[in-house]
Image (cartoon, rainbow, N blue to C red; front, side):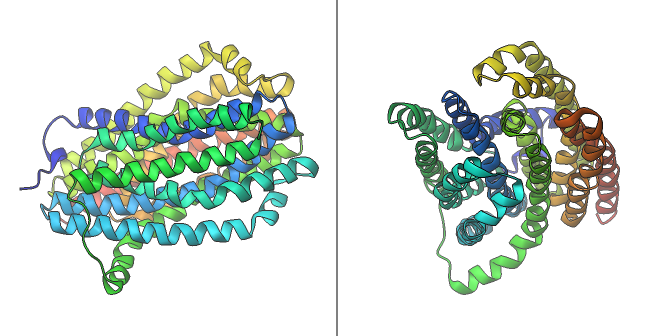
Length: 442
């Protein structure tokens, strides 16, 4: 008998354990980018640091695509487990990984072909544009490996196997921590070394995701072309909207990057450092949206909508406590963080701005994350898509443009953060309506 682990027990504890353990793995993905940024900044070349910033905005697109696919696969697997159908869970996992790999390659190929135009749209010029394009052409083809790892981690979390899901990307970060100083500094390969290290890290992530599924979670089942085609519909019923939802964030970040680019490489470097610090500092919040998916999915599969509602509020409480604690830590360590990246002048000012009031406002982004995760798992994925796109368009561009008129690049980042307040509150209101509608069907 398959155990639906999250249908019983303390929900806040389930939320905390799943978020804490999966955050270690998720943070490892973002630590990969942070480590790259640290070693590149040690070259003390503002152009290369800015190039990593521009590249991050582009790679975010392919990463977001992978997150969207993992949301769909993990939701389908969790529902099967909640319904005590292990054979269906294995089938969903196999189909999800194969389809994820296929669509991941296609998506990365499209991005690779469009790279010159994308870099130009972001506002990179001269040597900065050349360095950005070179790095992206090397590293973008490795992104499907990261997608496989993310989907595999989602499958493991659907089984409640938080520890093995965590270790998927932990090993990837360890690989990068070893390769980065060797290739970037010792071999003096600069951005080329960073790209090669990224390839190695992503290969480790993919391998460490597939091994425990095969060894400990029932493995995979044979699939045919017909079953794969049949698997597209249920997967994209969730992942289609989830991908659109996830892509809103890199689109918004690309707009902000373009705005900041007008203030020079120092401003882009400061924004890039803040952008790399955000998912590392708030990894538990990013993980929360994926971690509560199996909890919501299993309880919905068991018809326990009372626990779905309680889990939603517990997730918001957990997010608030995490953000308060991490914002205090960032503020206390802001000088050390700026020194780590050799940040000076405007770059240092932007790092200090992030490590204070802006980090506290991340709570409203957390509200959107939690609400979107709930909607994705309750069959209202399109709603989360609308909320996310609204946040990263209407909730970003007007505020950033307005505040930039008074405070320059600092105003761009302030406007981006302030715009999230309205949409965070709206997301919670709409999510509660989804719970009420779903509960009425039982």
